[in-house]
Length: 350
Image 1 (cartoon, rainbow, N blue to C red):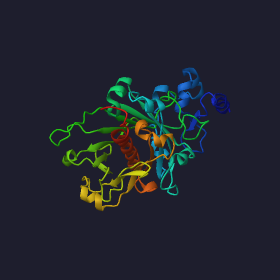
Image 2: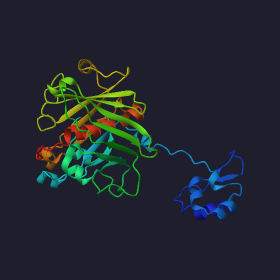
Image 3: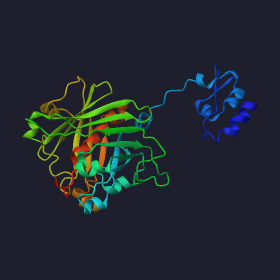
Image 4: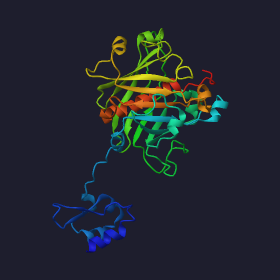
């Protein structure tokens, strides 16, 4: 009776987290204070509530990987990048980018306009953290950190934007892109572009995505590759991005514009651990897609070349049947693709 009364008093202070956890059988009457409760209790209160417990003897549970649960029921993602008028009007201006993320489903239109994205409920947010010096000197080649957060503005659940890196919560997924001076030397690229992924709750490595430079890219840059590796460095995915007249049917020529609305990169699962050749990619059926969609006849669509603010659709390999590892690596491939290919603005001299 004393334990139940004490639990009721302190429950609000502990944000509805349980104070007591059963110890032993469910039929028994003995209870053990939970880990959140131990942080709030003084030593004398703890001894009074459960004399056999010592604070230093408590074994805390391992943190749960939240991102796996968030992505479990997702077939894909729709992503809307923030539009800044300052970047359109002033080429030297470089703002921290932000993205709003919703859930994609197979019954959505094949071509997603901006109004389609705005009507979807918010699932996640992506915020950038980078230094002003890196942004203004290196532009799209800058070192940065991207955090994937649960929605921060519950009052506005749509794909609208809020300012800054959220200070009151931790990301569920963290992506770090180091600076790489990717200048080819005699058909060889010494420092390819790379992005590392970490679990936001456990801080454990979840994988990395690396640019796969081919020797012939110096002469034919219209077909680009990236490889995605898991935490044990096993090759999991290959991402193939044709540009202009690259690919079998030049399907990405002039995309994404009013002439060709969707640019598609293709995601392939790797079974044997070996990188696919160009001929294999042409013959194989893709398992997933990373698409850039033209926003339509609006400010975002008309100023796309100067704003660098794209709309994306990410379709996971085999959609909902893919593992959380494949989904996380596909998100990493989307992020690296954005900064490698799509953050370059026409009003910036290079």
